[in-house]
Image 1 (cartoon, rainbow, N blue to C red):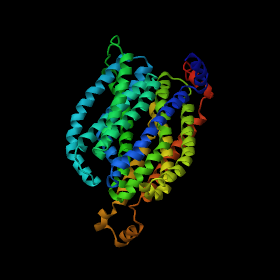
Image 2: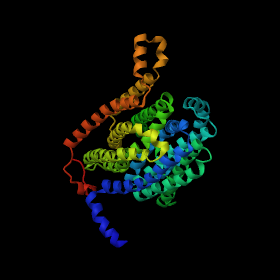
Image 3: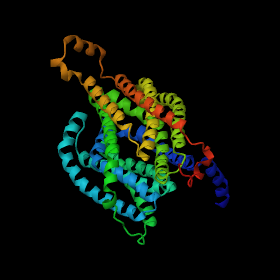
Image 4: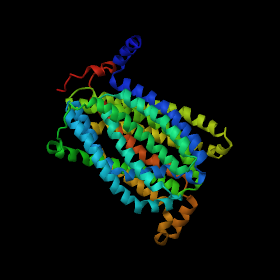
Length: 467
């Protein structure tokens, strides 16, 4: 063990905290992705019929929206959890985590009541049966919203090894759960398979945090001193997160609602592969947030360089993997007779992979800005998200406007047929492009002002302060 540590320690010093822990987290999550790929590509299509396969992603998005009230509370909590940890105020961290549990219980009751009226309408439009889905979707949304609080606590305390191990093992837990539950009831079993792994991650984090926050650490009130900064901080990130969640929901909802079953099922299949390119940005941003937040709170150098490197890393590695994923996916679709029908979606996989690579890079930019309490970009991003939602919904549902539409417009739209996956992906790309350009321009500005700190010296700047 000592021999291995002697080998790895110089590498860690050379890379710095960002890239060392990003590498560990990336390897751990990719091992989990292998298991998740087996689930998403082999198990789910086997037990969920093609007529319902396209409903998986939009129903997951609906669950995320139902859990948004908890997300709205936890977004500022996660920021201040990083702040308190960086300043060594562990008593406030302990009470903040306790309050999160209390809010979760209250919101679960409120969201469950709201879901009784909302979800039957969703199921009707998604063309699926209710059964036990209502409760499972609510629980899935709540648990998914609660999990980041505990993973953020692990990140803030630099427990990246625990975070990586729990993320990897949760994939195995998900596989076992799916093997048991999917044959019983396809969609319901799928959501059980989403809930149990998140509970496993929460449990692992809770055990690790119990060791960190012993009884010797007394809970310290934070609300009376920080309620104004918390509310002031929460406004823009909550608005951005809600707009982003709504956009993802509308995209998947439109694909399921307005497109044929084969195209919504095809989108599900290609998205399982395209999302691999999205993971690079999320793995990097997971480490980026606590590092930038800590340096910002302590007034330390090197923040701009972290942004530039994370964006470039996400773009370069994501594009390289896209070049591998697309031909491999096409080849894989030819191996199984039931999948031959999806080979015609390979061109769509190229477009979707590019969209996800760009979104991963933008996610790094957004993470960096939020960690530094900078929100100038939010109005533009929210406008673009809302504009895309309106265009997608109105264009694919143009028949609603038939009574007020001139006959020439209607015949043109009929001939064009906007209810196609290629059209939806084209709109997604046209809207993500200006967002990407905005992020690149802002990143270039940061590069001009970057501190002259070499990559290997990132971890050595912890006591340097801005002038």
